[in-house]
Image (cartoon, rainbow, N blue to C red; front, top):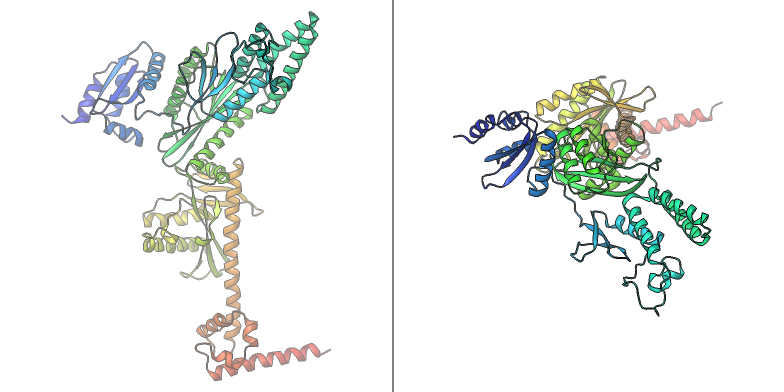
Length: 620
């Protein structure tokens, strides 16, 4: 029996109940795990028509040989079970978050004299390990701040030490309370260690509140020395918090998720804010074609929080909606013990945090692909704004220039990785017709360009390389004139026009669906403006050069015996009309096609002109 037919028949026998389905390959290995509100409806979709399936789903279905399922009581239970099974089995076709760094931990020793340090591995030594974390630098900075603010030892000694032990330098510079010498009581030390851990877990705000209470109590009890120490510690925490503050709301606890998409790999950035302070930034990579959809984003959240169950925030911000957001909220709320809101911000400070996360993800992805980081943001914004599936690394732009229909030319400029790529610039002289018609001129230019591509495509350079994006100086008319050219050539290349306002400044881009405003995307706006200015400059410069050459040829054509060919030959040899006028008869004779008699005629013509000019200048 045909494999797909067999699997579909099995799927049609499933109950209309919530549950988890487990796809397996021919070797019995689990390759995908999913959840469904109604198993029969969901699983049978995989083995029906492929038209609505993404590339990833089609590849997964090609490798499915059998499937199992587990019934549960509700869709929420299905989501929880799905997350648990994915974490256990790591199926190939589920979104699995992968980073390119090692993990690190915060190590806390046990006992009465706990110490806090950074550890690159988790050992079976009886200590408590907090983590794992991705950013070693962030963890090291947090551990150093906690030890410094709460004056915990970093020397590695075992306490209590011998009575004759002398304190080290850290005690004298007020970075350690010297428990080795009995300079601090065990009870006081334990309070400090507990406060340091609270600072690591929840930021400075709750610790400051607790320390203030203790300071007021110490002051009321006339223990002014202790109150002064607590005051100094509070000031240190407030100073540290102010330096680290990213969002204005000091009580803000949130995680921010945003994805940057590449041709073959996507990057997820997670920013973690606690008490308004950015306390962590993590990056994960996952293979996916195109922008993740709502179900993918749900899987991203589930996968992330399956390994990050501690210190969950009150709010989670996403750059796009996720599927089953109410179920995800319920799952996170149960883990946290309090309500968690999953939101897609539309404006304000929350949206700024999402944009920050998206820019971080885009930069990290570009760095991974070996690109220049400062070019990341404009190309990412341009890709997102135009709805492109890939980054437009190689952009071609075209403009037409003429004077009332004469000396019609076109300029082509290329931007590579967001920068002008001048060796690929090309110029076109319009030959197919005379007069003023920008639409026909643009169509002729692109026709000739892709005729050259057909000739040189094996080289992969110059005209032999296709652009990722074509931009035309003009509106919908230019776009509609060029679309048939692309269709005739059998090419599918994103095509847009660059529209200017009445002050000749870039205003928008236009395609099939009307104009797209670019004012809100500052980096993309700057890039498109630069491209439009550059292609206009290049086209106009060529037109001026050609127009000047035409004027010179017209003047030479007034001399008896000189036609178009001889005029071009003279200009090619001498470059300017001034050089021709100053040339001797012998120099003129060296030009191909110029006889001695014609050289004498040219020489005498300009000699008489000089004499007439002298007479005119001397008259009153």
